[in-house]
Image 1 (tube, one colour):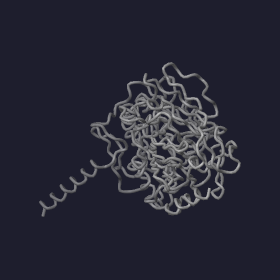
Image 2 (cartoon, one colour; image 1 turned 90 degrees about the vertical axis):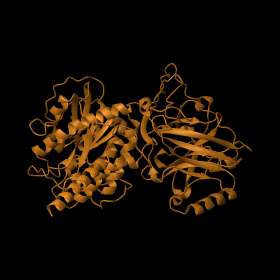
Image 3 (cartoon, helix red, strand yellow; image 1 turned 90 degrees about the horizontal axis):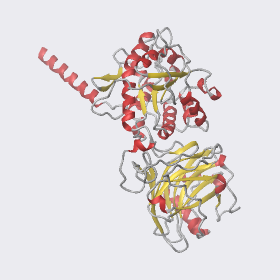
Image 4 (cartoon, rainbow, N blue to C red; image 1 turned 120 degrees about the horizontal axis):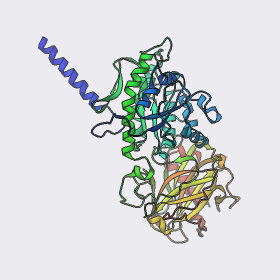
Length: 556
């Protein structure tokens, strides 16, 4: 009997070790994760409220002082901080205001340049200058009171539910993809003592650790997650570096195991978090640096086809001039945009036209791009459209900016904007002819709202676009010159709203000039008319949608 018990225990331990070894990691491992501090002083800022303040405080969590001992120059925000007192708002639903709103550029400028302390901790290091490179952010314990069910999928708006929280983190990931030069460290919200929704909190944080990045096909190294929640649920729960590897061990409970008289974690819990977090942060930092912290570094690929991430500028290797950007529409690195069905291809099914569009991994300037493959029959059409479930207010921007490449010089394509209610949708467009430079280089394109004009087949044709606060979708449309086909491929990257300050400075030596906005070539009305997905197109069977499209085309 004793031998049987020993055999059972041995099997249990072996099985447990296998589970730990197979546990998903918050980022791809090399052979070991480097827990050593950076060689140089790195600037870090922490967005927090009371739990974070206790964690930072000397004599409580000692995080601020310990960060300094690991070569981090620490600043932080708290209540009342920043433009619009944005520091007051750190609940999960507020993160979209920080990282995915028209005010994001204003908030990030202030955040990246903040050097003050808003908690009591020893800061012995001198400011090395420059911007904060690491952005840590954390919601407080009320955010572990997530309603819903543990397995709820991402929702369509911000709220304190499992689905609403997933929506928020999917949305802000799109901004993180535009800033590979910053390391964003998510600190999960601490647990509550109340067990009512504790299973939901556990499930959501497990999703963050194990599924969030992979579900969004996120391959950059500038986002990391530390499970502050988990380590506070049990003395035997951990998120740490052990023998050169990340170790994420769950406890037996889902509620606060380190109370302080209320739901603020105690000194012991906060100090345990400090002990486990610092080696993890060091590993996050080294991994980020190894992956590359700029657009050109983060690609790390050689060109295999037009649109490869390796081509980030001219053949001399100079980067393209940046745009003034006020809001990201799609970086193509963070999965399907919440509130949409993603980019979808439509075509004139009455002809031999073929049309395909999809995100292609590793083909962008710094990650993925949207690739359009098309063979448009003479006098026909195809589109790659992104439609929103609710109208979008893009009026904070002055227009659209993006980069594109083409497989062939002279390729024609439209940029289409849709506005107004579904029963009376309006189409505005601008036609681009790909210059010769676009075959070898990414070409920056800047289009202002006034560049878009009402489609010729609609009433009030040629009137300029003036409904940036009612955008219901956009598309890249393909038509043809009269009686001629249009077959090629196009790659699109970094689609965004144009900032309120125009970039008028000349490009540096060795950089390609932005193409002049071409005059619109004469196209047939049939060829210029894109498919116009109405609101019903999002729910109607595709065969009916295509039938309606064909009927409208025949009628006109």
